[in-house]
Length: 224
Image (cartoon, rainbow, N blue to C red; front, side, top):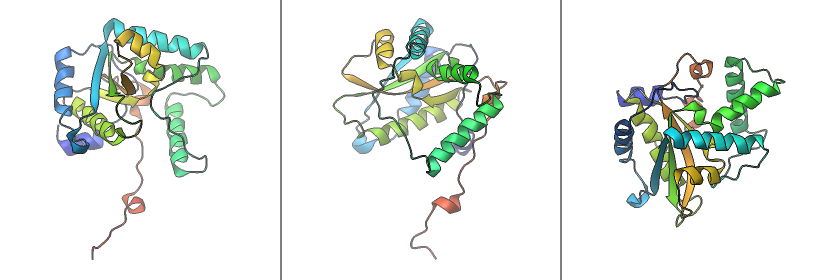
C-alpha cells in the first residue's frame, strides 16, 4: 500500500473477525515497524505478542476485575483535559459519534457498560501487541519513541490487510496481563495494540473522525 494512502486511511478498528493471524505475519509487521526512529537510537520498546489462550485469559481477567468494581491501576500516565478545553470537546464528540453509530442512548447504562467492556477485551481482536519498556526509563521519557513505534506498527499492519486499535484499556489491570503473558516486574507496561482482520460490517468501524483544518493549527515563519 502507498504510504500516503496508508496514513490517510488508517483508522481505529473496534471489532475484528475471529480469523487468527499467523505468527509469521505478526513477525513481519514488527520487523517493518522496528525501523521506527527513536531518540539517540535507544529503541526503548519491547513487545509481548499475545493470542490464543493467553489473550482469552487476559480478556476474561480484565472483565472480572472491571465488573468487580476494582479501580484500574495502569503503569502509564492517564490522560485528562479540562472540561472547557478543545481536547475534551473532541473526545466527547468522538464518543457521541460512536454511540450514535452503535445506537447507544445516553441513558442506556446497560449498553454503555457493554461498550466499555469491549475495550478491556481488546475489542475482541484475535491478537494484541503489548508494548513495554525497561523500568530504567522515566515515566515520560520514552513517550515520544513509543508514539513513533505505535504509529509505525499500525501503518505496517495495513500492508497485510490488518486493522489495529491503539488502546490502553487492555492493560489497565497490569497484574492480569503480567500473570498470563509472563511479563516480568522489571518491565513497565505502556500500551496495547489490538490487531486483526477488521469486521467492516460492524457499525463503529464505519466511523470517520474529522481533523482540524490545517489553517487553524499551523503558523508559517520566514516564508513569503
